Amino acid sequence: MREQTLASIQFDATSGADQPIARASAQLTAFVGRTLRGPLDQPIIVRSFADFQQHFGGLWQPSPLAYAVEHFFEQGGRQAVIVRVANGAAPVTLSLKCGRETLRLEACAPGTREFLRASIDYDHVQAGDEQSFNLVIQRVRSPGSERVEQQETYRGLSVDPQSPRFVATVLAKSDLMRVRGSVPLARPDRTLMPGTNLPVGYVSSNPDGDDGKPITDYDIIGSAARGTGLFALEGVDDLAFVYIPPLARVVDVGVSALLIAARFCRDKRAMLIVDPPSPWESAAHALRSIKALDFRSDNALMFFPRIAAMDRLRGRVEVFGNGGAVAGLLSRSGEAVAAALSEREPEPILRSSAKLAREVSSQDRRALAAQGVNVLQSVRTPDRDWPALRTLACGASASSDWSYLAQRRFALFVINAIERGTRWCAGMPNTAHTWARVTRQIGNFLSELRSAGAFAAVPADQAFLVICDERINDDAAGINILVQFAATHAGAFHSFMLTHRPGGSTVRPVMVNRFEATLVVSRELEQEITLRITPEKDFASVLAVN
Image: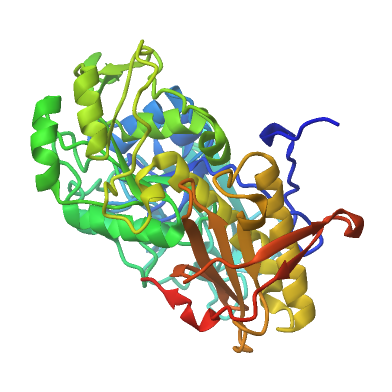
């Protein structure tokens, strides 16, 4: 019989109790910061630096985020989600003559690098209809360019506010432009080619945009109510990492933004990548300063030192924050499951496009690891006993597992996969039949992981526990699921309570007094899992942990 390995486990990306729980890639990295152009406070997925250039304009010296995204893909990153924030940026406008009046449009994305133009014609408009017109809006590569990057065409628009094709209403859904101010009573004049009476001419946008001031921590944090800044990521699933690049070349992210970002990552079950502060000029300086940083979180990680890479705009090597490169490196080093189950983690070695801003000795590397700070490498080390990668918990976590990056990522992967894979039950009746289906689905998923080498610190009958029955489901408005699985360290377990309601799902860590369940796997019943719980088990002792 062929031995089952991690690579042999296949999960279909489907939902429902009769389908296996899908395994997420857990490699999506979010970047939040300033860019040259692009929509504000909208998460946009990019799969290459060329994609980033298309949406956000490429490298720009006031944008550390642009360089971080470049480093991310150079170091092996696969896909990223970008949230652009700005501080006082203003959009360009475009003026369309309407007889003696003017219809003013403004770009949806603020900044000086939105090069837009519009064309008006009356093709196929019925004779005698003086209110209808056609509009074409284009984004071009540069002023006067004929290279069109994006185009929107609107047929049969109207200046009549009662019309379903009222121009202000229709353009409210545009990705390029919207109406500014009131709409004139007369429709826009036909645009002609310059110096002729030929149609299909264009009117270009005015040079009145503004890129705004340098961003601040407040711009990064944004508003949960409005879904801006960090909170624009609220609806993004399968986040593995969140990275906030420096606010400017010489301005680090403030502690207030890091604290809120760490809490956001805790709620999203993702990891926050934190740059080492720019004043840390040596390992000795870092060791002296790490305690003064006063930032501890089992949902955050840090690598030292910063990186040196070519600045293609300045034509010379510059020092950058390392978060983009770290995210790319961790993405290419393997999935969270593989990292947790491998006997030895891959070394954090940079590709040749980046170098270490300063060297770190083996002794300092161990000292920094003890403080929760990992060390990047440019070459393989002869020391085969290098320290495991850490989180910034460093003893400040409820679980010793959470101090280690691989174990923390694995636990987040497990609970994220279960939460996503059991969403189907949110609209189901809160009955014993639904509970049994949920229990079986999760049990099968955890059994697959156990067969691949997970939960190896305990016997098979104590590897995990799934409870979904009347003891924790007295609320008809939602379905509660208790999931517990073994930690890396013998005798320790991780426990979570999932709640699915029609309006959404929540996950919170809990503490359970004792682990007394026995799992019986019946091969004759097609691997159906049954739980035998000891009668004296007191499930009222399940305590929520904030």
